[in-house]
Every structure is written in structure tokens, then in C-alpha cells.
Image (cartoon, helix red, strand yellow):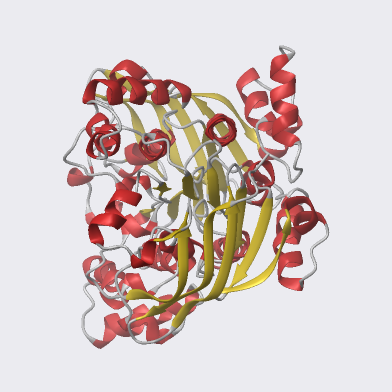
Length: 538
């Protein structure tokens, strides 16, 4: 039960760009100890901006221009720089949406997790390391005693996201700002993180702002929900009331998109017989560790094959093998019957062109110093030798194809929302006129309405251009909607590969059953029912 006195009080919060455009418009938040407030809304609604502002921080090009931000009665906006530094991490901590962009690549993970409690004088280095290992174990990270010795690039995206949760929890803060903390996690790991967060909130009476686009996830952790759009509040209320009895039409649309996902299916009937990609008994390793073990896969013209599995199962590594970024130690990759060179460096320009990759996190994939026209135009020049006005014309054509205005040519990535950035990544892939596009979690960082638009865009592009997709994801609702066939990956091998309907219909491999049962539903008692079942040994 939350205490009655708010630990966080935000009144009249206003955030503007340096040009004077309002991003967050007079937002109020009262958050009690032990209480979780879910912030939901479309990309660009101001959710992350509010979360950062709670720490009196604004992104480059933005500034907090109005309102009070009180933590335990102290208006942190009135503190000097040293006072704010003392509050951040110790009283309020932040888990960012993109762990890959948040970690220092030059420091070991353990050093970054231990830094907060040591700098704030809460623990000795020895105590901080012991606490970090305990957190690693709670978060189900591999070999928790030695995991922290790794550098960030030596961990999978899901592992790094869990490590970032450990870093935020290291000072046992009063308030957590959770910005999509389970975005990069598979559904089985997501449960463990949600359970840990609920445990942390209860044990330490931690308050939390939970920023998410997943309504089923927010249903498990939030006591109240605030719905945002264009920086303004649309509605606020108890979680169950907002999800099942929304008052505003915009909230109803968010809920309806999630509900519709459970009923949509794709059919194999319209597919042709031509196989364009064949992965034959392929094995690959990072040093002594085998990550993909004798995997075989085929994808037909115009087909979408989904690859699902837990973090570290080898999904993204398989994508790297196919694109030539990681040469396999055994096996072959064929495209329309022709064997491709194992290494990207040895592939011809044509072989590079026919397979393109769209990354999971557009913030990391886009060069922040290049304008949209240069980002999309580079492959046009590289693959087809076009220049000048020819490149510009093709870039504008591609922008129209992904449903963005032509004048975005001159925009920088920082001026785009998450959904817009992902459209730019898709346009860049299409600039090569590929036959196969590998999509690595392309909708995982997007809110429901924007994700819905991206899925519709991908389906339209597939129908118009005859594209084949390999769709890597942990979102099984997306798999049902877009994939003709689905491969389930565990510890570097496929444990199932069949039509999507048959994968979900069963009978299932035990791991497939585990994945399906781990998908949260939009019911506030779902996680509690999972915990109750575990307590009974079910």
C-alpha cells in the first residue's frame, strides 16, 4: 500500500524546445511511496521527456521552462548543480529505453553498476560489488558472479537491459523512472523483470513512473495510468478503469489496437513456391562460445518468417550470419540457389544489395550528424552510382514510400520521433532495392498506434515490392499478425519451425509452451496469477 504523502510532486511542468515549441504542456503528477504511475501515449507524446524532467534533466535542444519538481518536499529545480547530482541516482534513478546507447562501451559493466553507490557514499566498493552480484542473480543474468566483468558489447540487448535495471537499483532509490524497461526483453525474461520490479517497489516502498507502450505490461505494474498526447494529458485514472472503461476516444483507440492483435492472422495460401534464401546446417561462434548450432532455414519470395526466442538464443546472430557480418564456421548460405560468400567483405556489391538489415534501435542505427537525405541517399549512390538531383529525387520517392513528407530530407535524426526514425531505417534499407529485408525487433520500441502503422507499412511494401522478410521479435502478438511461418530458437538451435498457425495451435515443444504462456494479457491480476501458480509448483 502506498503512503499518503507524495514523494514526487510535479505541478505545471512545461518543457519547450529552444525554438519555443512546447513538448510538455502543464503536466501535474503526484506520486506516493510504493505507488506506480503508468505513462502511456503515442511516440512523441512527451512520456520520456516527463521522465527525464522528473530528474530536472532536459534533452539537448530542450529546456524546462515552467513548473515545480519536488522530491520529498524539496524543489529540485531550485538546487544548484551539486545538489541535483546528489539527488540523481541516490533519490531518483532512471532506466533508459536504449541500454545499448546508455552504457559506456569503454568500461566494464560491474564498474558502471557500482559507481553510483560508491560515489554517493552509500557503500564501499566491496559492498557495492556484492549487491551488484545479488541484483544480477535476481535478474537472471548468466553467471552473475562473473557477468560484470564483461564490456557492454559482449552482452546481448536483453542482458544489457537487465544490467541497466541493476545499475538503476544499485542505490536503492526512492523513485524509479522506468522508460520502457522491458522493451528489449523476451517474454519469459520480461516476467522475471516485472516480478523483480514489483518486489523492489513493495520491499523498499519505491515509487515509480513506468513509461511504456505495452498496455498488457502496464496493467501488471501500474496503480494508475496517465494517458498523454502531444504533451498534454488526455485522461488519468485507476489502471483497470482506463484499460477497460476508457473515457476518451484516443485511449479507446490504444486499447482497441491491442485487442485486435489477438485475432489477426496471415495465410500461407498466397505464397509462391520460389525459395530465395536457404540457410544450410550453419554454425557460428564468438570465440569459444557456439551461438548458432547447425541451423537450417528457408524463406520464400514474398514470405515473412519470424524468429522468436529468449535473449541470447542466437536470433540476432543468425541475422549477422546471413548478412555476412559474422562468417559461419560451418554450413552455407544460398540466395536463389547461389552460394554467398561467408564474409560481407568478400561479397560482391550485388550480393550486398539483395539482403538488407533494419536494426532494433533506430537511435543507434542512424548517424546523428547526418541529415535524412544523406542517410537514405548513401545506398542510392553506392549501389546504383546516382548522384546530385538523381539521389535527391530517389530519396524523396523513398520518403513517400514510407509515408513521410519530402521535406524531411533536411531533418536531423534528433528532430524525429521514434516511429519516424524507424521509417527512415526502413527507407534506407529499401534504397538498395533488396529482395530480402531482415527486421530485428523493428516495432519493439514503438507505442501501439505507431507500431500498428509500421506493421501496415511493412505489409503494404511486401505486397507492392514482393519483399521477403525475416522478422526477429519477442512479441508473439506481432508474430501472429505478420508471419507466415515461425521458427522458435533456443540456445542456438530451432526447437520448432512451422506455419505460425500450427506453432500456436500446438502440441508445443515445452519451450514454445513456456513462451506462449509468458505473454502478458491486459488484465491487472495476470502477473499475480502467474506468481500464485508458481507458488503451487505449477
